[in-house]
Image (tube, rainbow, N blue to C red):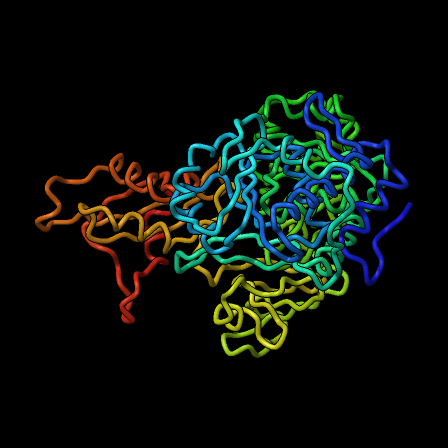
Length: 523
C-alpha cells in the first residue's frame, strides 16, 4: 500500500498506481475498463498532445461533458502534468456555459457529444479557444478533432511537464449571487490533503470499488475518485443516475463505496432494491444536503453492514463529517440529535463560529461557520475582491450559520447566503430572480426554497405581474418557466410559480423572505 506524502503533487499517486497496481482497474464504465497502468499512459499522452498544440505548464484547458472514462483521463492528465483543467457544469444553459468559458479562457475544450452543437457559438464568443476535442466520434476539422485521434498524437512520448504541489490543478466554477460565475482555484497541495482525508474517512484499499453517479465536474465526485485512487482502488463511472438500475450495478461491479445526495438515497429506496444487491457495500457517503431521519433509518436497514458518513463542505473547502461510529443507532431516539448534525471537523481543520464582525460568538450560540485548513481553496479566479470578502486572515466564511452542541458536534442552523439547495445543487436566488424579472410581463420577483419530498427543497418564484405597456397580457406560470429555462440551467428553473399582488418589504427596502417562507413555504 502506498499513499501521498508531504511535498508531492497529485501525479505522484497516478504514477505510483501505475507501478504498484498497473493491472487493477482505475475506472470502469459499462463493459470498458481502464487500468491504472493504462490511465497513467493515456494521461501522459494527453499532456504530450496538448503540449504539441502549444499548451504549456499551468495553461488552462476545459472540459464540458457528462461522466465518462475520458473525463477521468482528462482529470488525471492535470494530476501528472501541471496543466490546469476548468470543469464546466453540463447542465447549464448555453449563455452560462459561454460565460464560464470566457472567464476560464481555455486554449482547448474537451467537449461531450451533447454540446457539440455549441461549436459555432463558442468559436464566435471565445477568440482564445483554439481547438475542441470531441469525446467520441467526430470528423476532424480545423477547429475540432476526435478524442482518440488527438490522444494518438501524444502516444509514446515523454511527459512534457511535471506537476508540483504549488501548481493549480483545477478551476471549478460555482454560481455567484451577482450572477457572475466564481472559479474556485484548487491546487495540488490542497487536493492532495483532501485525497488523504477522503481515503481515511472511506477506509479504502486497493480492493475497494466506488460507484460514481454524482457529476465529475463537482468537487464531491472528484474527491471520492481521488480518495479511491490513493490506495489503488477503482471508480465505476455512471453517465447518469438510474435509481431502478442502481442496486443491480452495485452487485454486478462488487461495489463497496457509495456516494449519493440524500434525494438519490431516497430514490434508490423507492425502487425497492434487493438487499443482496447491496450486500457488499461497506461505506455510504452522503452530502450536499441534510438527510431526513426516516430515509437514513431505511437506508441503514437495507445496508446493515455499511458504515454511513455525512460530509459537509463546499467547493472551496471540506469542513466536517459525521463518522460511521455516530450512525450506529438510527433507531435510538437519544441519538437523533447526533444524526441531525454534520459531525466533527476533519483533521487539521479549524472551525470557529463568528458574528458579522468576525468575532467569536459565545459558547453554545449560533454563528457563521468560519473555517481554516491547509486543504482550502486558493481564492476565486481573477476576483481578488470576492476572495478578500470571503477569506479573512486565512479564515473562509462559509455563509452557513451553525452551532456546536455539548458533544462538540456541528449543527447547521441557517444560511447567510440567499440560496436554495435543490437535489444537491446550490441555486442562488438573485440569479433566478433576475431571469424571471427579465420577462416583460413581470414587475417583480422573489425566489425562496420550499420543502419538497423529492428534491429536499424546490425553487419557488413569488411573482408580481407587470401592468405597464410591455405587459400586453397577463403572464402565466408556464410562460415564466419557459422564459427562465432559455436563460439559466434547468435545475435552477422554478418548480413552483406563485402570483401575488405585491411583495412584503422590510423597513430597509429589502423583500421580507421570512414572511414569504411563512406564507408560501408549505404550499
